[in-house]
Every structure is written in structure tokens, then in C-alpha cells.
Image (cartoon, rainbow, N blue to C red; front, top):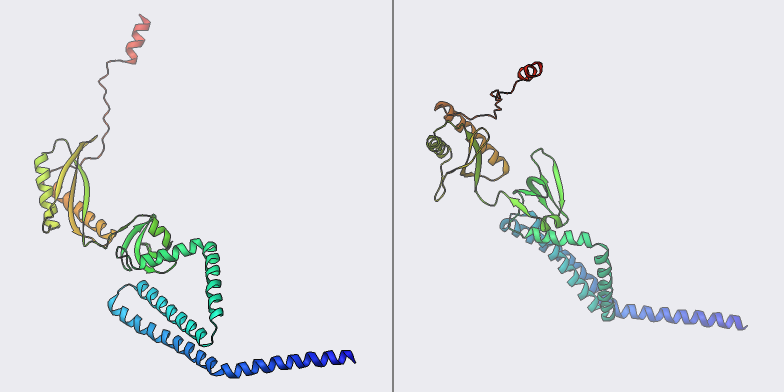
Length: 298
């Protein structure tokens, strides 16, 4: 009899609790529906506002990584704002506080576990807004050289001259120096050469300057520079420097190739020799093996 009474009392308590929950749900149902509608509205707003911002940035910003990062951050902020407003409509202020506290703890744990990944992510944000390196630039960094084809939140992708792609973590680009050929329209190219000791040095200098200036017209304050450097083993060596259009390393190689052919042709036409290393054997030593043998016999 006692057991039946306990069971009935328990069932009655459960029924009362369910009834209270149902009453609470009915009372708060308008707020719940409103919260769902508000949160859904913010999700849709984030989608369309992100699309609108992407179109605007596409006309204003040429770098894809900047557009991607800006749109993602904007959409995330809008969705989080809608989430917090929805919690406020449900009178879940304590839940909101707990969510923020839990997010801080989880964020700290994730930050400690993913230090390298987060370092690359923040480096990617910096690279995206860094004007010194952009998509399409020709750079040399970390022992690699090529065209920048992608900058994302994890790495930078470079296409080398052999048509292979190199993926470099963003943190490596930030921490290591890099050389960007595309940031300046013109660069100075150096060419080393040598002439025979019998050459007229003034003639060599004038002829070289005329040849390079004709092949590579200088602009503004630019000029072709010629300087003898040293007395080499078989030649007097000099260096000539000139300015030309350069946007990648290949342009330097092409300019140097043209300069070598033009200077060689000019030297050949004027009887100027570019010597190659020569080794001379001197037989003027008076010592003789026969002389030593004669001394022994006497």
C-alpha cells in the first residue's frame, strides 16, 4: 500500500513539473519564436551583407586575401551579434555570461594547443594588408623565388620558374626577409667582364658605355656606370651597371644576356680581346739533369 502511494506521489510530482515546464514554454513561446526569427534574420543578413561587401571590395581592392578576411570577419561579427540578442530575448542573461566565460576558457585552451596555427593565421592577416607583397608579385624568400599566386590565412603559395608550386607558412614570410622585384618598375643590373692587359683602357671604357647606353636608354637621373675593379690573373676586370625595366628575376637575366652579346660584338669589331685564363710554363731554369750527371762522372 505504501509503495503504491509513493509511486503515485512520484508520478504526480513529475506531472506537476511537466505542467510547469509546459506553462513556461507557452508563456515564453512568443519570445522563443522571436529569438529564432531574430537569429535567422542575422544569419541571412550576414550572408547578404558579406556578399555586398565582397562586391564593393572587389572594385576597390585588388588582393583576394584582403577581401576574404574582411568578409569572414564581418559575417562572424554579425552572427555573434544576432546570437547575443536572441539570448537576451529569452532572458538568458546568466546563460550568456556562462557562454562568454566558457568561450574564454575554450579560447585559451585552443590558443595554447594551436600556437603555430594561430601564428600563421595572424601572420596571414598581416600579409593580407601588407602592401609590400601582393598576389602577382615576384618575390625571393626562404630560398625560393617565384610569383605569388595565393595568400590565405595559413600560407603563401609561390609558383617558381619550373612551374612548380611552393607552399610557405605565413610566419616564415613575416619572420624572414624577402625581396620583391615587382614593387619597383626599374632596377639596376650589374655585369662583370675583363679585357686583355694590352687593351687601351680608355677605349674599352668609352666603347662599353656607348654600347650599353644605346641598348638600354637611361631615364631621369639614371646613368650607366663603368668601373675597373682589379688586375686579374689574365685580365683587367671591370664592372658596368645600368638601369632597365625589371618586374621579376627573369627580366634581369634577359637584360644581362643582351648586354653580354652587345659588348662582345662591340669588342670583336674593335679588336678588343676578352682573355681566358692562361697558364705559362717557364723553361728558363739553368738547372739540368745532365749537368748533375756530368759532375758525378768527373
